[in-house]
Image (cartoon, rainbow, N blue to C red; front, side, top):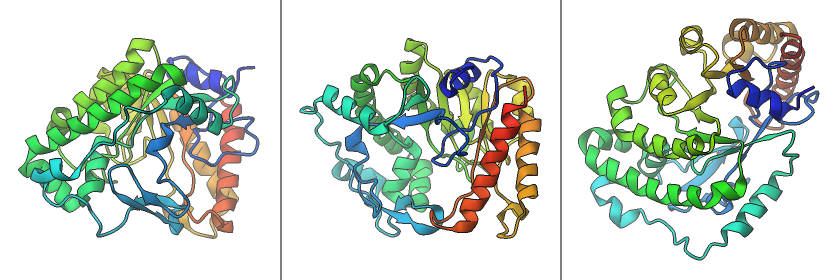
Length: 337
């Protein structure tokens, strides 16, 4: 029998797996032997990610939200950049010339506390160029800047890219990851925040530079992008992306699967909405939602279930729902092929 890691990599390589696995967003069925994936990122870039929040390397203060299971967002009303034309005066990359990269990589890997023969490591350095600029400016000012001063935004994003690509170059062969991960949430539930043309002009060339680390080493490449972002999937596929999470159901996932077959892995295909959000939703209703997703996207391979209920970490309703959902995915997924 394959390990979780072997089964997952088989899917990303376009093969039919032994079972449909659960992507790891932090909550898994207790029946799962080990998580299929864990993310490794440079420790000094994540020091602000503490239970009570903190300030990142750029000066953005992040605060946790209890209702979302302590996910963090930039502190409301405290944006650090108000005029994109003055970004050079505000945004300063930290000095990384004295970092002991080998020591940091060793520590970062030890903190994962995983068996690498069973769990695949995703490597990424940041949460997206679009999202980073929005964290500096907020969506109102940030989106206006993209339309009013596109060249300034591109120069800022390229400045960020030079910094993050340098870090990636230093660390990728020390981490020896199994997967290269790209991240950027560029869409709302209903539509992208901006046009495909702007996406291709501003962002895709930067993603391509990160993807090259994977292409050069023969590693699978995945993309995290929430919301209705199907319009850019072909562009991402063309730079080597072979897995997309969380692949939310607002997208035409059936059409995506038909177009790419199992060459672009749908890592998602489930959303907690409607009746599923009710506190009194039954175990049977939750089970049926998992069955529907697996039966829809599982045939022919190219599918990893990704999804969970989000709520306070100590909320008994959220805990119950996730236990039912993920146990259902384990049972249905292991008997599917």
